Each structure stands twice: as structure tokens, then as C-alpha cells.
Image 1 (cartoon, rainbow, N blue to C red):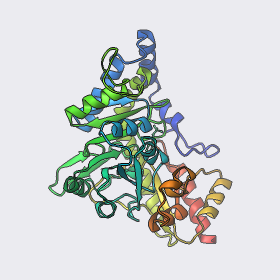
Image 2 (image 1 turned 120 degrees about the vertical axis):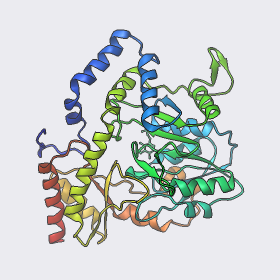
Image 3 (image 1 turned 90 degrees about the vertical axis):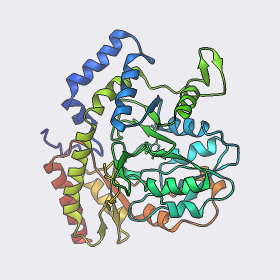
Length: 381
Ligand SMILES: *Cc1c(COP(=O)(O)O)cnc(C)c1O
């Protein structure tokens, strides 16, 4: 294993990951360049088939990024301006942004304090006659409880679009013992291949997943200028494509996704062991109905010293992240959608969470250094 460079610790070490598979990646890129099929073509075809078969889903529609994927999904549902879409307030901005962009109304709801995910109960309380869709986010690496969310959606006739940008490869287990990949359970799933995601490319990329043939056709058409056949446009669409070079890279990296996710799980277990006995910290909970692929390893600092810990880590050369520091309804961009009632769990999480370096290339030297630094902080604070 490549030894950790303690002088240059990264949140995500993309370079070490590349170096391990460099010959395969380089060859895949060169093949696309040699073929000069930069848009569409066999590399994109191959990857969408590989991902569909990995996920066990009927259709994968590649697109330009995860934000576009969410936008295209919502455009396919035939919603009307002012229709309400339920979304967690504790998520990345993209999830709510596209709702507002399409003149729909984002209705932001709280999350469950242990998993950071929305639940069916929370969602059901926010349903009104204007609600048309739900966008659960599988945050940090675990699937939201899709079984109960689909039940509530079915009862109220709502669409479900899963934002699976952070949980690629996670398995959700239903109460009958069967399981499905996160992102393949709702009417549409969306994902991002941003470089730091669990399955990341070397630029921007995204995809939509669905088992519904009619929706798949609609999504493909919207992503391609609303075009049914060349130069015939059924509706106003967008231009959102996955580059052939990115598709070729992703097709190589998909073969390593399970390995990458288990390396993340191993690093998470190391952190758990190091931090489990520190009273001021809460280690990430594991759901029993979803595997955790640790897009982020997120601790809750219970003694109010999150920002001091962050400063201490920075001083010791350890990067860390606060995902997310501000509830979405308190962002200026979303002030018109704020009811004026803060969501208690979201408020607490924004004050207390901190994410540590987490990627597929962590070795014991690096983990040991980070664990010692955190432990030392709480021994003296
Ligand atoms: C990364 C991310 C997105 C957006 O993906 P991009 O490819 O950056 O557009 C959307 N939702 C969540 C939860 C994300 O983490």
C-alpha cells in the first residue's frame, strides 16, 4: 500500500486512487481519443449498460452532472408551477435548487437525528393537496428508508425521485428480506459522478436511473433537447451529456466500486473504534436496512466545540468538512420558502457535525494520525 503522506493529507485522495489503476485508465482515455468519438458512441453505451447491470435497474440515462440529473427528473414528471416538492433541509443545495429553478415550491423538512435522512413520518406531515413529489436524499452513504417512503408516496399518489449522489453502491433491504441498490427504488433515481463521489469521474458527470420504460424515454428526450428524432423536438429540453472520455473512465472505475466502498467501510470501522469511547463525540449510526458506503464519515460533536476541533485539525494539517453549515431555508437564495419555523434537528446538526478525511486509499498510518489528533483534542478540551 502507498504510505500516507502526512505532510499533504486530503479529504479525498484522488491521485493515489488513480495511480493504482493508471494503466487501465490511461488506455481507456487513449482509446476514446483514438476513436475521436467524443460525444455519445460506444464508450457511453458500454458504461450505461455496465451501470444498469451493476445496479440491477432497467434504464440508466447518462447526463452532464448530478444537478442536471435532478432537474431532468423533475422535468419529466409533468409538474405545474407552484406544485410542492418535499425535500430535506439538511442536504446539498442542488437538491432544492432545481425545484425552485423549475418554478416548483421546495417544502423543506427535518431529518432523523441518527441517520441524517428523511423518514416517511416526517414527509407525511408535510404533505398538502399541492404536494406532487418527494426527493429523499441518501445522505453520506446510507439509503433513506425507501420502503416506508414508497408506501407513503403510494398512499398519496406522489412521485419519488431519489437523490443518490452520495450513496452509490449502498444496498437497501426490505422487510421481506429482498434488497435493491439505493437509487433504483423510487420512480427515478439520480446520481453524480463528481470526482469526490464514491463513483467519480475526472470532471463532471451524472446519470438517471429508472425501471419505467415510458419515463426512461421521456428522460432521454429531455436530456437531448426534447428531441424524439433528430431535429424533431417534442418539448423544451436541455443539453446534458456525459462525455465519452468520462464514460470510459467510469466504466473502468465501476469495476472497483465495491472494493472502494469496502475500503471506506474499513476506514470507518477504524475511526469508530478510536472515537467510540469519547463521550463528547457521537459516531455515525448504522441503519439495519441499509449498508453504509461512507461517502462521508460524519461525527457529531456534543460539547459545542465543533469549530474548535476543526481549527485544531487544520493546525495539525488535517482537512475536515462541515456538511452542511447552514440549513437550506436559511440560505438567502431560499428565504422566500422559509416558513419562519426552524427545523430543530437540522439546526442542531448544522452546529455539531464534522466530516473527517474519507476515501478509498486510507492506510493505518494516516488513520492513526487523525485518530490520535482527535483523541488528544478531547483529552485536553
Ligand atoms: C454532489 C451532489 C449533487 C450534485 O451533483 P453535481 O454533479 O455536483 O451537480 C446533488 N445532490 C447531492 C446530495 C450531492 O451530494
